Image (cartoon, rainbow, N blue to C red; front, top):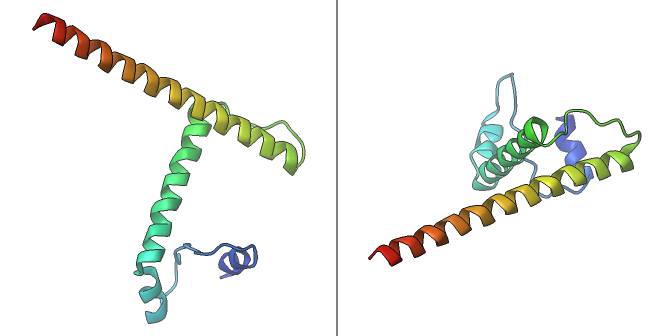
Length: 108
């Protein structure tokens, strides 16, 4: 597989790209059943979910910047914005729980 070879050449330690189409050899079937491969698949699906969030709700639909370096800055800014929004949501949730705890304690 060309993508697997490229990943290995770029230093990816655990390549976890499933074979699509064609008959899988017994060796390939065994490889795709290893814990490391399965962990890689779980990690990959998590990344794809995060990318989906960035596209849907964080303004990453279109990058007008030219060049790889500018694109990387654009992606980094979108990830930072997402992380800040997530932290803010967690802090609001924590504050609500604390407020409800104190209310229930005062009522008792």
